[in-house]
Amino acid sequence: MRFSYVAKTKDGRIQKGFINFDSREEAFNALSKYDLIPLSLNPKKEELFSFKKKISLKELVFFTRQMSTMLKSSLSILETLRTQIIETDNPYFREKLFNIAQIVESGGTFSQAISLYPDVFNQFYLNMIRSAEATGKLSDVLSYLANYLEKNYKLQAKIKSAMVYPAFIILVLIAAIFLMTFFVLPQLTPVFETFGENLPLITKVVLKFTDFFRKEGWIIFLILILGLALAYFILRKKNISANRFERLIFKIPIINDFYKKFQVASICGNVSALLGAGLPIVQAFKIAGDILQSPTYKQIISEAQKEIARGETISSVFSKYPTFIPSFVIQMTSVGEKSGNIEELLSQTSTFFQDEIDRFVENLPSLIEPALLVILGIGIGILVIAIYIPILQVGFSSFQGM
Image 1 (cartoon, rainbow, N blue to C red):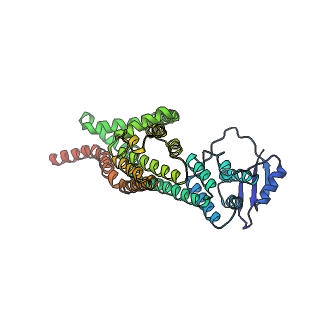
Image 2 (cartoon, helix red, strand yellow; image 1 turned 30 degrees about the vertical axis):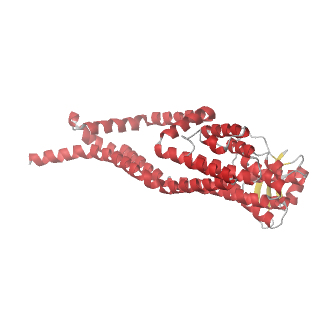
């Protein structure tokens, strides 16, 4: 049974969340065991419409880093989980941590517990933890996972930051069109009507467009909403939409290069980490392929796994895909195989491409800025020309009549 609760921590903070137990008494005792003082505890009613709640990457980074730090301080896995339950602000993540702690307390392993939540802990995370438990290096592997997740989080943050300026330019253009359409042009329309058919073509077009937008703008808005809804449902068909979207990416020169580097860096880094955790190379490729989102690279890694299982080398398999696997990667894997240090060479390759990705993201605003400024200039320029040409014509005619 699922209960919703309000509880107070030892330091006086109020926490709200959910907990799963067979009875109210068991739920009450569990909260008390985790140093939470229950203030209210009620059965959770079934929701008519329930939306999937997400745990952010930032929260997962913090959880993994804290787990590693506390385990290195000689705390037990159960003690660290109890601390995380108290420290976590997200009630949906806390609910999962409660369940994980219960499994560990009843004799299950940490990997068995987190395997119940693949939407939070993916196959890469899960298999790294399984290997760590087998080798007794759980705190070290958690530290690596925290660094790995933090890199991904920082990359996402950089991309979002890089898109702030382009978004601002687009909003300025939209705001300018809105002001002209609903405030400026309506005031000038009576003046322009006195020109009759003598208005410049550009002014006629702008007036027709703004007039339609004022009167029938809801139609455009409705079409836009329906289009977005249709796009969303199409994207739900992952195999179809992902393949088409990826084919589009491969046709855009700069984005194509960035996308390939990102996929290659991910593959090399993940395989290197899994090999370092003690997994066989075939299994490492399988897991690395499973967590990829790219249909093309997922297929390449799947084929590579089969070929390697038959005795082929990584470099020979990669060389069959020169369009998607850079020659640098093929050379580095070849050197690693010959020297018996494939794990280290793959790690270096991943770092090299990660640095390339970071530089690209940092330079992204300067690449987009010129095109956006041109678009902004053209958009506002058309509006200004459409308004001022008739006004200048009137002024020029008046000057000639003097």
